Length: 264
Image (tube, helix red, strand yellow):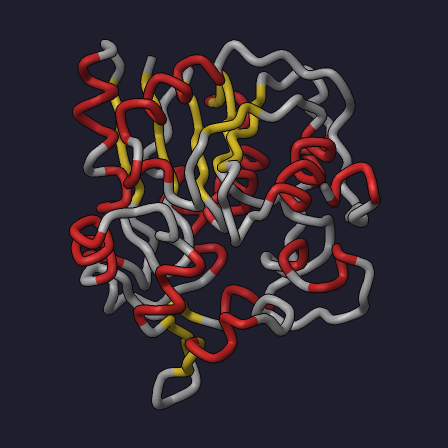
């Protein structure tokens, strides 16, 4: 199989560097997308359309499309445009778009029962380490915040490697409403959701909501938000296994709320 993977916010195509060789050992091709405004394309203007196009330019028939964190929304937008090229879509520790709402809508307090629609997550201890760039066009995390959000189960060496590569996340694409009407019609689309049991960003209650909206039973790995870093071999095997997931419910384009069922 050929896997095409989309990184999340503040990250780049380097996200998947440890996963690629593990996928090769399993006999699969793994291609990483570099989104504009990130990684090696840091100096390019970041737009939601540009994100979509970066994925579509690399898509081939039969691809397994993989998204991590906010990259799940970008993968969904690409799948909406070219469903004919997608054999399966896998969401890793990430969110689905809410039709007509900005990209990070599901990570705001709206999905947790409040009313905020801020482009950055609802107020939390992370706010202490969340900073805006000088021109207020992007945000980034100081190291303690990055560890809390992304790398809470990683070794110091792993954190050193990853944190040195993080870049500020452009704010402009986060305010653009997302419309993916074709995606919601693909009830037969092969799809899956991988969640980290120790994830503090796409935390278990939020992850279960996303899996429910996707109409699947989530697959769980004992990691934080970045299984591709802390357990790349185990994650690669689970990613292959995920392609066998069968839908158990419909795709849901609207937001859901945390309930007692999911909060534990």
